Image (cartoon, rainbow, N blue to C red):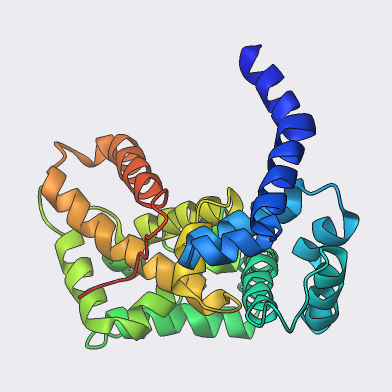
Length: 293
């Protein structure tokens, strides 16, 4: 109850008067003060919060502007806040960069969601080609005898036909698996080998798809903002999402072996423990989670 009242009074009264007082003292609006004080992800994060909480529609709408309208949007913000470009020469560049990151994050989520919604289709030649490519990348010396085969278990699928394992994450799960195997082939082979450990083994492909879900849920919940705002100076893309996925795969394998679970039956418990560890790292304003081999 007390917290709700504080949020109400802060949002409707105290914040407004505090901003007014600071503007009188410094001669600068909140956006300018943020640019003067902070850098990296903390700067973009605070700018986004300031725009979102503003009573001005011009500022609120800035977080949803199309890339083609960015320059006009920045000009509108400067006009709204009475910022003279001759006096504050860096504002335009800084604001444009922040807006690219803020709106880019929203677009990235939509792009990932659109791919996730596409189910694996065995009648789609591109989907089938991608699946066979995964086999070739992970098992370069072993020929797949048939499209539907028990051999798929060798790379961690549950059944004779992998398409049934992609239901939760759609084609996104397969794209992630192929990306990691293609861009970090040596690491993929090493992790696949360790996943066959007699005591600490796990289903490589199934865990990989599970980690796609983790990466997706972190993106959806906006937990990836600080990482991407630090990692990408402009618009984040699918490539950056795939890179984060690769980090999860590599780090989960290390985590699993270090924890030494008694059985694969405890997978969900350790998966959640790993999830909490990653969420904790993502709270750091300076965080950049990239695969270091």
